[in-house]
Image (cartoon, rainbow, N blue to C red; front, side, top):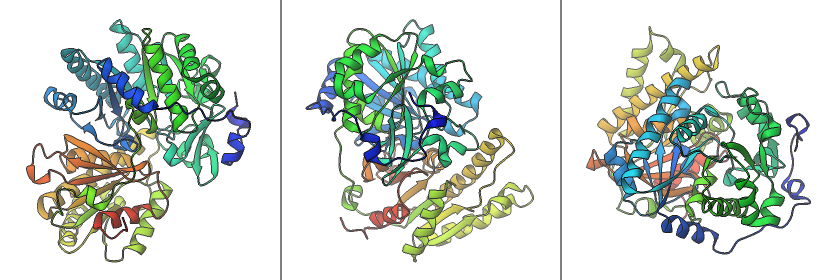
Length: 490
């Protein structure tokens, strides 16, 4: 096991794979997983802490509401799983705890009424930010109290399309062929969810404040996966009890398929598991085969929509700022409306700043595609909580501006950039309760939701693009706009 303090500053893929066994590709793995789910009336429900967890799936329902009616709709859709957007990453600890308990209650009731066996995935960030271990603690405690305890809690933050992989227990963030230990990345400096460890066992010890020691974390290594296959994974997991944390090393999709097949073998013997996984996990657990990027005509299969497009940017990570700059350069006819965050945070000027932006936004959308962005200088508080409050305030303003634009300018498509922003735009700006994840704009990243229009038929089929703050290259946001405009080559 590698110590986070001794982890290399960066490695190439050749260095990471040196000495590893060859990849074990199980024939028809995803089909086997789908058939197992269907045969046992098993459902996979993903509690997504922000909307970006659906970047590796297609043709899957997503809910932002968990009423009995909405859950019934999701259970009646084709397939054996769906996402529920909890948005808990944008909450404080108490709010997140309450939200996860509320949603899990609703899922449990809906599943019981249908005799469904539910596997839960607490989808978390592939760069290890978010309410861990709070969310999984809630689910573990509730399962134990109900007499259906989890044998193991698998921590698997893989997101292959974005270069998020784990080797020798070290979790890496990759760009091109350079992979940096996550504890040395900018993501580890997050004002609300920061950390220092790069190995998953050390990260678990750090985030649990020593309540779980790194030495007590079970590791599923790439040797186990590639040399032992599903049977070896089954045996490791059957040796766990009392929600023992398990660090899962994953380098590519075939590795993940082996782990899921091993889980299914262990479940056949009565074991139960909770997964804290990155965006690659849901698709594998659902047995969804990969699909190529969406074309413009697939997104607008029902025909072109009137109006102009809206891009909403709230994320402040360095990559997003570069993407916005590139968008402005590459799409010169795009108009930009900037929400001045210092003025918004000043009670004396907040109302005037909001009205200025609202008037400018509606006017711009009447002429052309428009970018609505918060000012790029990030303002942080003197604590993680106060920083989160600032982020929530900015997001709320962007969402209210989006709602105004939807009412008065009827955009033809919407892109939202950033986790908190994209969640709030979906639920409050566009009033989405139900949607279908149509697929992605690029291989494995940037999902397109199609609005179900359950409350407003005029919004049915509206493409909503969920664009995480920390994915893509400098050019990706501009390319997304070109695809939606029909300017990109199919």
